Image (tube, rainbow, N blue to C red; front, side, top):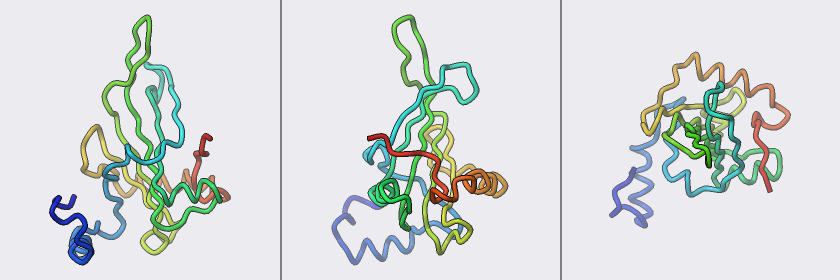
Length: 155
């Protein structure tokens, strides 16, 4: 994350961004994703496999992909999974289980164009091993006709 004094200093930001760029093959934590467009949500009851609140967010470039079916480079989609607690009156969000991130970059990720990462809890440290990233790619290849994206924008 850039220091506040760098914001708005175009040439400094570009230079700084070069030093902060993620290593090849990695997907950085999507800072500020909760301010992006909310694509949709689902709730799987607590106690069931993958139970909890499932929220999907998209940055501006990913919105183009949801509208056209082709996601441009720079698209980022975040899948935010939160645990759920239930009382007699309400089921509410609890702690974050993890976020999954897809980032489109055809140069960095030539096999389908998407890079995948997961961040556990509220950590900003990547947690997927190379084998798990390959499993993400394999699963998402089932949606090749939709540019490897399962979700659809909920109007």
